[in-house]
Length: 296
Image (cartoon, rainbow, N blue to C red; front, side, top):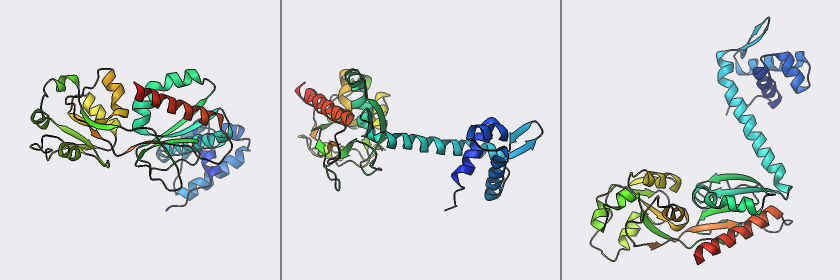
């Protein structure tokens, strides 16, 4: 792996590129103009290319400098965001959440206005992922992950007991009244889950119909349900991600059969540390909302 240039060289480059002036960059960074100029020269020597054209009335970025600038700015933005989340961990008003992407889109977002109205003092920092193995956030006070509840050194509270069932657009549903009709449609599945179209067809009371060979797959329900919304085919879904779309009439269950889901969504809140007001408020709110969803 190539050795990264020192951070202060990159900061000098980013400030100079925005200002197109070593003098103005030096004022921003509380340095001398000669120190900024020397850091830029050191960076150019390390990279093996010129980043600026020095002119009498100021600076001009070279093609290499224009290409490098967005990368450096994005890196600083990532560092600033990560630092903000980390330093906010001890703030009782700041809630860092690490949430499964589909849960965040289809369950949390439709209810988020109610949460923010009930707890206006909480500042949210939300990071999303698809699978629980994807970088559990050490800085998050609360995580919501999808799986079977097996996470090393982490205890989770199961939030859902869902069922798996087909969903599609209302227009497409009007053409489906039997398993044979379903098999003639384009089917959409999710990669990596324990229960697929094969599982759903195998569990059917009518054993005379098996899943078609050609099934399209996506890596997340955020994609597969969007395909269903666009009328591209029939997707397998479950209560947590589909119920809001079904209640709004945007998706329809063309056939009633549903298969109990082996996996579920789990809430993980680290134990043993000092109480965190925002995390406790969110945990209690999620559990109340889930209880209300089951009762409804």
